[in-house]
Length: 306
Ligand code: PGA
Image (cartoon, rainbow, N blue to C red; front, top):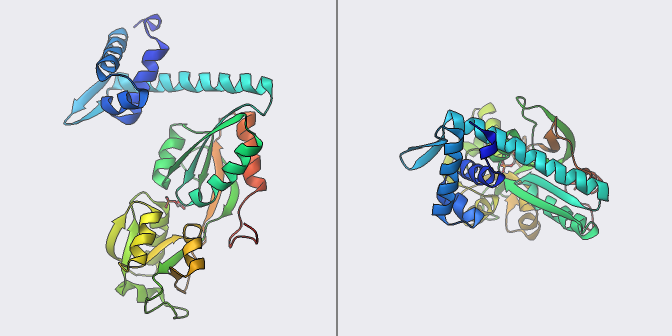
């Protein structure tokens, strides 16, 4: 293949298809007509000389040539973003861009800090992605963001971590629950309770499952739901009990809409970490945001005035 026959525009389109696993979704995201997008991918594939995607059933997958090209296109994209950061750095910290990805549990604290940061650094653009642990680990492995707010750092990835804040997990129930006033509840007692669980891939869920497995309790799962908000509503509706981040339920606990059961071993103590890939050169804007998060880190329970 001759690299001179590839264009940046084609690489961008190709990456959008590869990341979304769908021509239609990439066309929508890029505001392109689907035939235009297909033509660009076809021209790129002709330039490479091998097919880039294969279709199995309704899904499309990268071929080995597609995988190689996706890696190279990702490198080119990262290099151009770095160039933009370097140019911004020449102009000073007050310009630039930060991509941050935070856990669904941290979405109850980081956006507030982000608001204050953006207000005092109006020249810095911040893009924030919210996802569960598994989704964030995939983004981290693909080097898609500058900074991550994650739980335990993954062992298989080379990352730089700093402790950020506590993320205690509590066992919540509706205030009418028979155990609402009980003290020092044995975890075994929960074997009889219907549980509402987060989706697979959630760190909150895996921590709760690990705790009960260690206590020999197999959970009776009544329902699986895909967000902290939906778990709260379902528990408030009386469908079961659940383990959630105390940050996610602070308002409901304060208002008495939910209660935290006094189960032995709870709260489960977890910590959020601030991390980024070890080889990553953080831009001045990203460093400023990291510093901001550290100096404004939340405490739990919230300090007076928060
Ligand atoms: P998650 O976040 O449940 O959305 O994955 C919490 C965590 O991993 O601590």
